[in-house]
Amino acid sequence: MIIWVQMKSKLLSKIIVFLIFAWIVLFIFFGACSAVNVTSRDYIFRKEVRSHIENAYYSADPSTMRSELIAAKQGMQNLGLTEDLYGAWLPWDRTPDKQMKWQYKHIDSILVRIDEFESWETSQRLNETPSQQMQDVYTQKLDNIRKFIKEDDWSDWIAHDAFAYRDYFLTTVFEGISLISIPLIISLTFIILVLLMIGLSWDCC
Image (cartoon, rainbow, N blue to C red):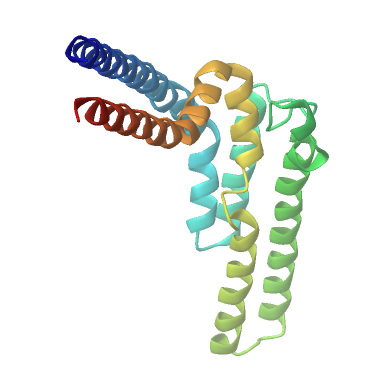
């Protein structure tokens, strides 16, 4: 019995060492992928696209909104994001609402709304609408346009994902899988260790 307990104790020690080593390797690899994504993938996309989208959202006048949205669209084209690309990598997830064709149409639709807004503004000035009344409606219309630029997420998310999966596929996929699997692996590791320790304590009794 004593020999069996000692053997089981050594096995437990080896398992613990293996798990610690595996976790160190996993976190190093995850950290490396995250570093690449932050310093290269996200930086390039933010420089070409996202920063312009954010500038458009926080702009206080339609002309600045338009110029920033046009710059964002040009940034997508500079990155080579053609209309046939998808913001998804799984075959069954590549639906029309995640295609770059829809991304470009969405940007164009916001630009049309800005044109309509400026037409309204011009007509109100010609009709000499009271300034306070016009200012209230002006603010509301700008807020309505902002909702199309950012709803639950920034409106360039299709372009972001399309760029990530095309140029940084491995680091993007592994980072996503890690964020989901790490909590699960931690739980399983804890359960395994607890069961092993319970089994060892029973053998000692």
